[in-house]
Image (cartoon, rainbow, N blue to C red):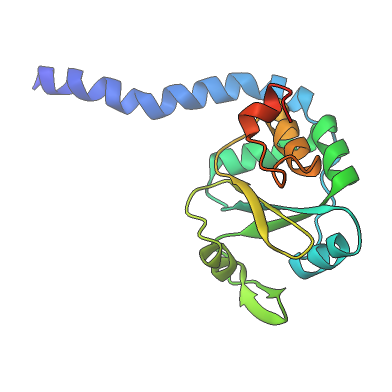
Length: 175
């Protein structure tokens, strides 16, 4: 019985050890985060505005239970370099992948849940990048810190993706 307890102890401690690290890092993350947040707009409005400009659409697909989704929204998406890029080159949208709330997409009312399903989103958070026609031109399914998020956003807004430059080549300055 004692051996059984010894084997379980490390397994039970794993989820809590990550929480302790996250909690100890929280003050630093909060200090990095600004007080502002992206100007979230409805999906149909974002696509219309992007179509009438040279902007793209940034869609954050999240769930309420997702810790990394909360962290992305509380820190990364509030960091000034990210906000600068979003405000300059994107229309920003948030979709809760489990919400029955309706959005208008291509003239039809569908739930946010159905939009996430239609787009094939299965992991959270997922960031989708759409052009002014509402076509997905890129995606990233994981938490992104400020540096990575700025790189993803500038990769899309620079047009490198549409010129078939790989993200790695773009990061190396070859795009």
